[in-house]
Image (cartoon, rainbow, N blue to C red; front, side, top):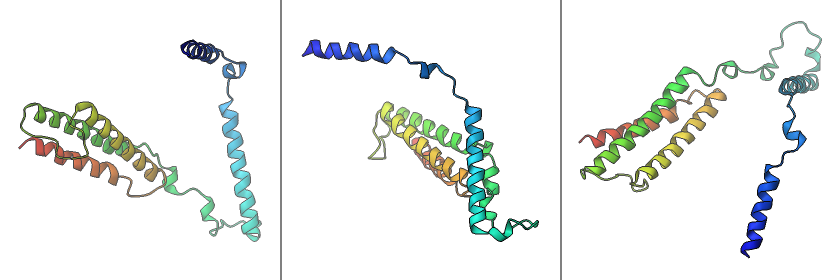
Length: 170
């Protein structure tokens, strides 16, 4: 059995390292983007014609088709300085919380208060990175959609880790 496994492993390595000509060709991203914008305009135009055909001939700005235009929030920058500051402070507080908790545990003055959190450094960093990453993802999606509560996730996370840091100072 070992010879068969080794042969399969060697075959997969050899085949995996081979490249085909399609992998070396350049992708025309500019053309793809122009085609996608053209398709989006055609779809919007078809919807406009189907929903409100009488407004097509008018010279006035149609107010009934405002849903076809992107909202002002969609035009704003998603990765703004506020977004980076809030999510960066959430990450910084998470790292500070782990560091203070590990220091406190090493001095035998305290123990991890969260029963779901591992007490090892690697375990705490893994859980905190996952939570901060998920919170940043939720915050990004909310901000991209124009939701005004995008700041809630990183703020609550930073505050929760702030409580963890403060409890290490007792």
